[in-house]
Image (cartoon, rainbow, N blue to C red; front, side):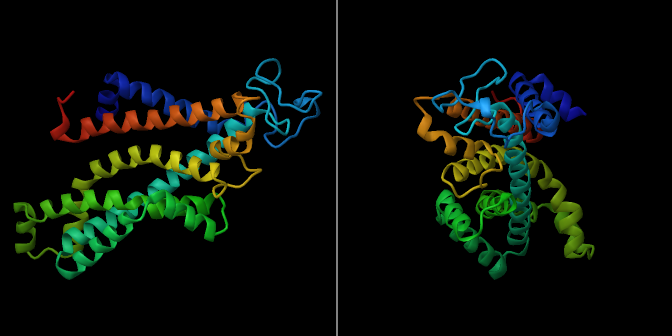
Length: 282
């Protein structure tokens, strides 16, 4: 509650929380909020010339190239994008924590081997690696989430490794070792709690990156496959109509931008609250 109150005192953090809560609520309530079935190609969803209907009337945000309600597809697309963002980022943070803690605590050849593997993964462009993995595997919601997780854990691992290396030299860790505490006890009870703020901050900031990467993969055609809607594949399906029906690109693009901005604002605010070295810096 203290963290939540401090978060609400920051205008940027409060704005981010409001947007995040709104997007998550609309995604959860999509079956009740959506006025139409997102996959229903309606007879009156296109003009007589076969063009998408612009926003207004019974179609709040207009229709897409197949006569489907854009607002309904954005609501259900939020479910896809947020599930991938939360799952992929959660797995990435977990992998990064494990690798970073093990490398920082073990040191020696074991720690060096883990960090050299991390450096090797860092050397590959994340987007290119994600495209290759997504193209090799059959794209689906869970496959895309795992692909994104496999390319996003390296940043967390390096930060956690640095912090763990500093923690193992602290007096209280030395005292635990002198008292005969086991490695598992030291890692779980004395090192991991100090890394929780870092995990929370990177977990929040990483959701924005994950949502953007999912949208990029879907836009390139190697992400979540139609007819399952996601914000990225909505843009991908409508890119050829950018001039004739700009709302088909503008609305999903604006939602992606706003959601990524909101998670970044919340992450920055959490960093200021949880990291003592950041407090008071404007």
